[in-house]
Length: 373
Image 1 (cartoon, rainbow, N blue to C red):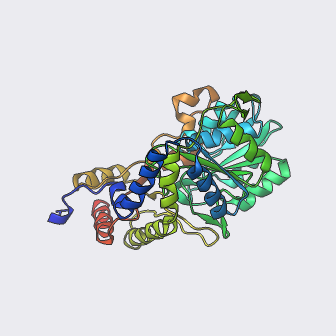
Image 2 (image 1 turned 180 degrees about the vertical axis):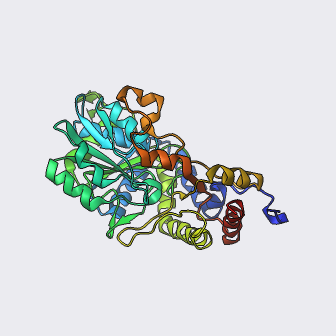
Image 3 (image 1 turned 60 degrees about the vertical axis):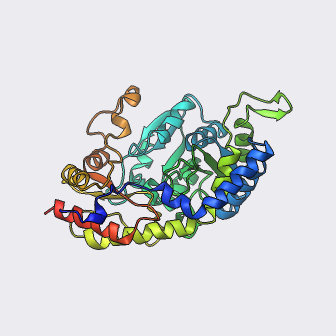
């Protein structure tokens, strides 16, 4: 495709500067206030942000943490998941989803994904449950909620804890309930590229379980129960005050950000629907499009042509976790999870962010169309 003059500039996967400019003065003012206050750790902004997040999700408690990975890790720790236990999750996700299980010395047990949603295949979970199974880490991949109804039924039947990995799904809903509020706890990442992103690392755990809430709150701060008094061995995982202040400002815009992502997704799907497999929209859940991920056997060709036309695209994920060297000790092999492996060979994520102009989205989609001819 020959580019027009306006399209010669690289179209990135996301444009954080475009998001910053409209709220620039608010952010500058908030950061200046914190610097002048001299209070940088666990101050009023962290507390206020926790309360606002809890209110947004209609839960009783939230704990600001240093990363989404820590949110998963400390949640499993608070649930007393330990060596000898098994925790079920998907291998088609970012490594943190399973890494956090390894952190508490439990064994990750992988289950294949659904072809249409790329989320964990609920029909395959029960056969993996043993006497050692203690929890399921449910990933709401790319912004689409997993099948929580059947997962919660399994949890009740087998007395399992449910950790919702919502790193890519802030603001998504399942049957009118916010993801993260359905299981025992929900874990969020505020990595800059996320739908709600800080200007550095950050995370959050939300829950309606007072025990989990209080334990994670203590764990994040060295198990501190009083001035230089430590009830147990904890961690250093505190959300910075400056990040909390920035996230509070962005939280006021998150629903509009997600709506804008949905509009871009509709443009893509309307143009690409007959040429590639587009993300699914399901009646009982809302997709917040952290990624707009297509599937096609012509993935590599499209990837190269987009690059030639100065359009970014990324493969999430090129190698499933069961085949990663880091998890070689689990003994999985190629062919164990065919849907994951097929997806790894076909998925390609296109640029999507709230400020992406519709005409650029159309240009991207039409470039993909030309590539598959």
